[in-house]
Amino acid sequence: MSSAQAQIATRHQEVVPPVEAQAAFTQHFDPTQPEKAMTSYQKLMHQHTLQQFEIANLSSRRRSSDKDMGVASLPSEGSRGSMSSTGS
Image 1 (cartoon, rainbow, N blue to C red):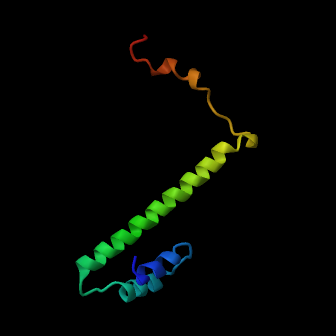
Image 2 (spheres, rainbow, N blue to C red):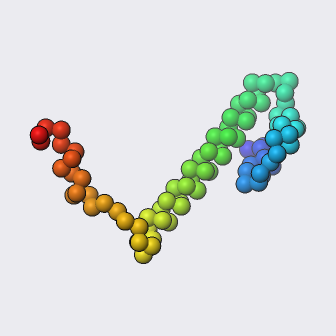
Image 3 (cartoon, rainbow, N blue to C red):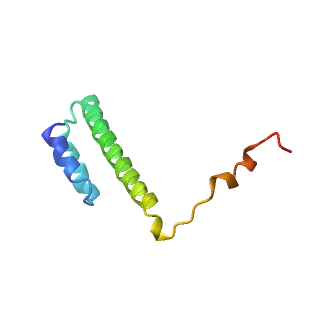
């Protein structure tokens, strides 16, 4: 990851006004080479998406491991009968 990408990535949790985001894009990506700029931006967004999925996954694991919170769950044997399409 280049230093420009790292700078943008570190700001991912901040709310950036649209005008500032547009200015930052042209500062960090060369508009005279649109394909290279697009590829770099696409990689950056892919990394951001992966990070968001990882955060969501960790949050989900944390919630599912905390059984004392009173979260209801369905017993697995209760829905097996509805899985059969030939039982009727």
